[in-house]
Length: 230
Ligand code: ATP
Ligand code: MG
Image 1: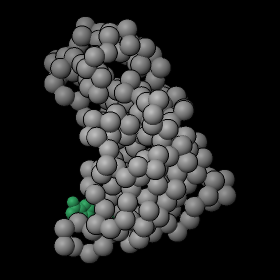
Image 2: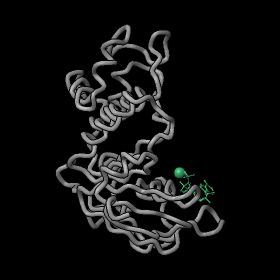
Image 3: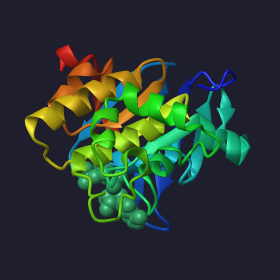
């Protein structure tokens, strides 16, 4: 993480609605200490993705503030914000280019050594080396096909390399085979270490590794506690 961003996230009486539509989050308040892993669960339409988008400043609140280390996100320089808060979405999106380029998305200055180290950290190095041109394989070319689980690992390597103080993860719902599932779970533990994380969790195994679980319903938190207490 950036030396100057610790990752303390606060939503202070945030009210938000899309356009002139109804209110999705009403006076929502939440304090996430630096380094905490929060799993966000709840029924469809509860507002989980909306909350994630407010914290990554994809949207601004209608009222109230979202703060990082005591500073309103609206007051942060766009570049600092993009470095401090990274969101990994369900699509785990890869663009046309090599595996290495894809991992270096948020860090175009990264050396190949750094890219490989990030892939190793999240356990993606093995399958990448087995691709026709290894790290230089074009992900859209024949033979460069990657599975859903592998796509997820590449996006984890990208996030690991970017090293944000705050990581927001909208966990993929796609079902994976058992070895992939295990690989993702191990990668996740590495990725979550030493940073704040908000995970929209679809897997029980993810909820289990969180420090704190928030259950959302209709834009409100209805339960807030350690996984074993829920
Ligand atoms: P899911 O588990 O299905 O992903 P969620 O908890 O992430 O659900 P949100 O996507 O945050 O829920 O949606 C909360 C509410 O906001 C829903 O009623 C949804 O219809 C509405 N909504 C979401 N995105 C938009 C949008 N771009 N424009 C208008 N309404 C939206
Ligand atoms: Mg959602």
